[in-house]
Length: 124
Image 1: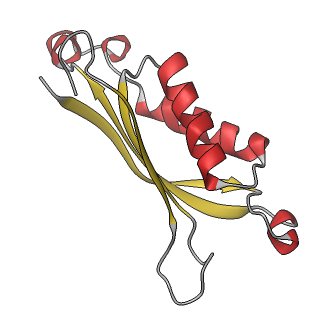
Image 2: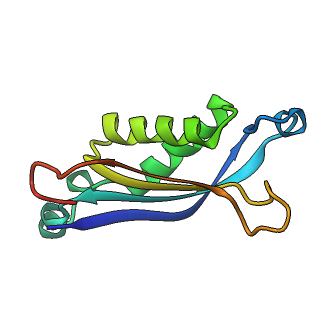
């Protein structure tokens, strides 16, 4: 079993960067998330509490990004991973952060992390 709940191109607004000019105003960071879960119970019951609530996840990640103000995308990615695992019970996740415009002449730069192993129910 390997069901995934996903969020693509979630726009986060945060102060992030190591250079002084990056610390002056918030910028956009784009986030893609994949979370392993077994969706069969939600499909059978048609009830939100039996799955991962992607709206709640998006709101929480936006709030975290806005409050953290890290220098590095690596720090933001790791904190987001911690939240997804501890608050939403993600046993496996894929997280991609893109910082558009950070390097001239590129579409974007960023980081991809994957955390967790197999879930107890065999997902991921």
